[in-house]
Image (cartoon, rainbow, N blue to C red; front, top):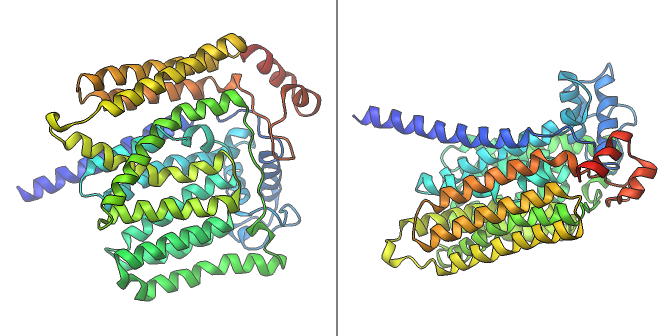
Length: 445
């Protein structure tokens, strides 16, 4: 009977993990072939094409730059990953984005596994993965081939490896590799990841800091970074690449629509963590959140930098939701959540009506806001009745709205200028657009 129970538990574990990964891959794979962001993605694509077409291209291309296709101010890792995908398929925008999008989808599964390492119950980990997938800017922002998106996924992997190492010291060897990849992506993120891991291990498992595996992994992981710096004689990529995305008001409002519920849940979870600081999950979420909060000004005050805050917020929000579900119905105080759902539903509907009135050509955006408003209104109704199915309605409804959002992306052309901000339609038409892009701007929006 114990063997049968263990086998059933293992199958459930794999089933939930596979389900989370498939849901993330499905929504990430829609409309990846949009026109590239001029300035950022175009430079990466040109570097990747030069690398992929080089006769000397191999894994050593990461350590020894080929020709002059790398700028000293750009991190090399993302271009190398894109070059590998170009070697497997066509050199187009979808293949360019697949390394970041694929790792973004995989990071949802890794966050679920992180929750399984730190939470006593599986439900908290499932809820945390759901918050990170549908109640965060992961899908709207994580689909672009930007180094900060890649760094966010690598940061989650590094923290997961640190948690795994508490049960098996050999996993600490992977921490050095994760930090090395982060250094080759965004240097400040590597420092943040190293600080988060070391501070957490010092509080939670101090014996790991005396493990030779940990320091051997860090030393081995420093070789790629050292080779890169010695090759170029410079480490400008460490602090450069501070371009800021300006995606336009409709797109940024839609990001807020999906992110605000997760933000409020995460903040509520962090307040719970402050009152339970003796627990490992509380230490992890607080250290992770404050570590990223400190490093964000060193990266850039931008929309995409805010995505780095959502993994610890999602973990804390998952615990908060699990606690609410475990309370007896007579002790549940849901009036605040009911009021919050109503307020967010009214805000989404106001955005929908405002865009319909001021920008009648933005039909896709109006539809997305209306779907979010309907979902939140139904959640508020079920919460007011004390129905525990409101969580299923929240996640499923927001996932459908998110799928609608990515499915209508061809009508929301996003073009990044070389200066690091989005050009308006008139600027894009004069400089970067094609007739197809112009047609999408005029008709579909």
